[in-house]
Figure 1: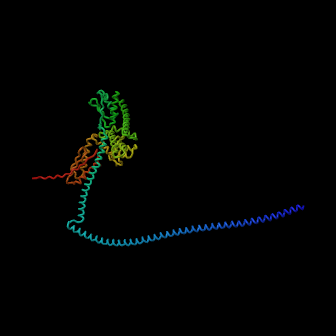
Figure 2: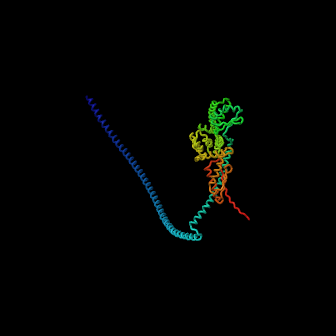
Figure 3: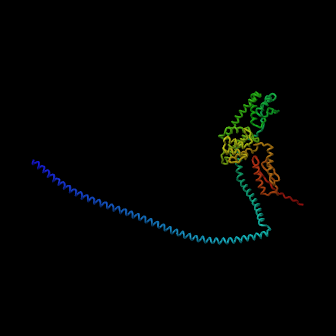
Length: 510
C-alpha cells in the first residue's frame, strides 16, 4: 500500500516536474518564435517599404517624363501658332499692298475709259464729217454705197466659191476616181460571165413534117389542147422541121417544150394524153426549179436560206429583165458584190447574199402593185433575212433610204451587171423616151438654148447662151442638171453632163 502511495506520489511529482519542464521549454520556444516572427515581420515591412518607395519613384519618373513630353508638345504647338501668325500677318500685308495696287490700276483704267470715250466721240464726229464729204464727192448715199459694195462682194464670193468647188472636184477626181475605177475594173475582170439575150419565143425542132401533122392533130385539136394546158401560142408555119412556141412567160414556154418532147418521144398525141403529160412536166419543172435554187446557193457558198427563197431563186432561171436572164444577172451581181465588199473591207458573204436576192421581187407568186425592189424586201423580211440585207434589196433603186454600207454596193454592182455591153436588150420606145427625158430636163433651166443626148444617153451636151449666164453660172448649171437627173431618172451606168458656153464675135472688113 505504502509502495503504491509512494509510487503514486512519485508519479505525481514526476508529472509535475515534467509539466514544469515542458512549460518552460514551450515558453522559451514561444518567445523565440515570437522574436523570430517580429524579425521576419520587420524584414518584410522593410521590403514592402522599399518596394513602395521604388514604385513611387518609378511613377514619379514616369509622371515627370509625361509632363516633359506634354510641355514639349505645348511648346511645339506654340511655335507653330507663332509661325502661322507670322504667315497670316505677312499675307495680310500682301493683301493690303495688292489692294492698294488694284485701286491704283482701277483709277488708271477709269481715267483711260474717260479718255477713250472722249476719243470715240471725236472719231464718230470725224466719221460723220468724212461720210458727208464722201457723199458730196461721189454723189451716193451711205446705204447706196453699202448695197453696191455688198453686190460686188457677192459676185466675188460666187466666183471664189465656184473656183473652190472646181478645185475640190479636181482633187477628188485625182484621188477617188482613179481608185474607184480600179476597184470596179478589178471586180468586172474577176467576174467574167457569158451574156445571153432572152427572147419571147422558143423553137422546138422535129424530125420531119409527119410529126408536125401529128402534133397539129385532126382539125388542130391537139394544138388547141396544148395551148389551153400550157397557156402559150404555138405557131406552125412553113418553117421546115421546127415549131415556134411564143409566150412572154419563159416557164410556160419551157413546160410546152418539155411536154412536146415527151409527147413526140412517146408517140401518143391526143388531148387527154397532152393534159396528163403537161401536168407531169409542171411537177418536174417545179422540182427542177428547187434544184436550180439549191445548186445556185451551194455554188455561191450561201447557207441558212429559207427554202421558199431558194425556190424563188430557182424561178429566176425562167425570168428575164431587158432580155437579160435574171438568175444569171443575180449570180453575177452577187459575185460582184462579194469582190467589191472584200476590196472595201466589208463582209463579202453578206454582200453576196444581198446581191443574189436583190431582184427576187421580179418573180412574184402573186400580182402586186409594189415596185420589185420594195416587194423583194417584203419577201426577204417575211423569210427572216437580216435588216441590212432587206434594206439593200429595198434601196437598190432608191425607193427607200440606204441605212447600211451593203446597200450602195448592191446598187453599184446591179448597175455594172446591167450596163455591160451586150448584157441587156432595151426596147426602142423606152430608149427614145429616156433620151427625150434627158433633153427635157436640161431644157427646163433658163438660159439653155439647145440640148443633145449622145452616146446612147450616156452623155448630155447642153448649149447655153453666152449673154444669158457667165462661166460660174454654167459650172453651177452642170451640177444642178446632174443632181436632177439622179433624183428623177433611172438609167444604167452614168450620164456625163457637158455645158458649153461660147461667144462668137463677127465683123466684116469692107
